[in-house]
Image (cartoon, rainbow, N blue to C red):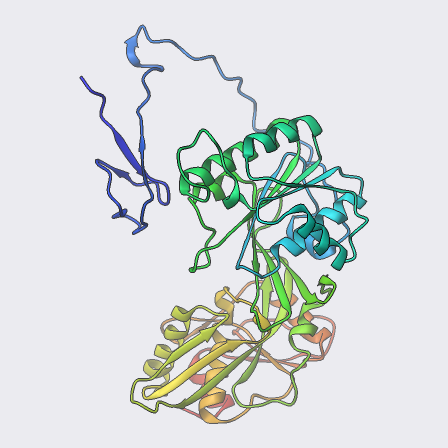
Length: 454
């Protein structure tokens, strides 16, 4: 009797009875593969089946020392990694084409080499001469980094087993090719197999491996999501082409805090770290203008101030547009609906544009109140009071809910010269400094008390 076949989606893990071109669970195309069932194992043939070896169990209460770390000397990169590079770790770095992934990793490889780590940089997209020219342009021509231009993963692993480097950078995982996998480079099967082999090498040899991954048009790392589960750390390199600022964000980190960010500035000599991102994001801000609100946010463990900019204009063709850059479009629609239904301030027939200045992407709900303040300021053509920061979460009832780390947000605002804050009720001013708080219980209070609308 033939064994039943099982088909599994590599994107979401859904099981299917037969193969199809599109997964009905997640909608991904060409992501369903055949998986053969186990032919042997405990219980496969009753009590006579071959048994496995007993696994040694350890008590959870045992104390384990923290893993050793190596800092590269670039504080922003060390912060995102959780305090430095951990041996035998696998890190995946994704980002849009041309955003600077290869540049920052070449700089990181040179920095770790200066700290005494033997480093190998493997490029599957460029020749060694091209990588060497970029290094010279960045002032890294004398860095003790070994280069290789190869895509055959079998040859690469054989070389790495012989060299046993402390750090390996692979640029990129989509260009790696395994001769025992019958598919083209960059396919789901090739990417998954290559990531598995490189991660296994990191754990087996104790080397730290950094993989570069391409992203899809939706901004997700291309390939199966299982690749992100295999590695220890997943970093996204973000930024807008028109802005010199770049954000390195940790979305997964087994050795440190997630959602930590590092801020860099693209210059003619590569990427330079930004020690005070709040001052940089607000550097070009002049006198208070309608449609502008400064948000005091938290990114990982650091407070960051940025500017929300809004523009409200009549829709010329009766079809209002809702455009947002740097924030969630769904939350913009929610804030607009709350302003209309709870405050009686209509936005129908009006084009609404919202932008986070500097190319920063904000994801925390505490930005709701700042976005609402910018929208109200733009609609009423009235600027917020000078030197004022705003933060708070808005509920569907229109109430303003408290957020975490209020004191850290206000301390950062004080350091940059802000003396007023529109905050949720119950917030306390920091002990040091002169900060005037304006507690706001709901959006109706913000509209009427600050802008005289509603």
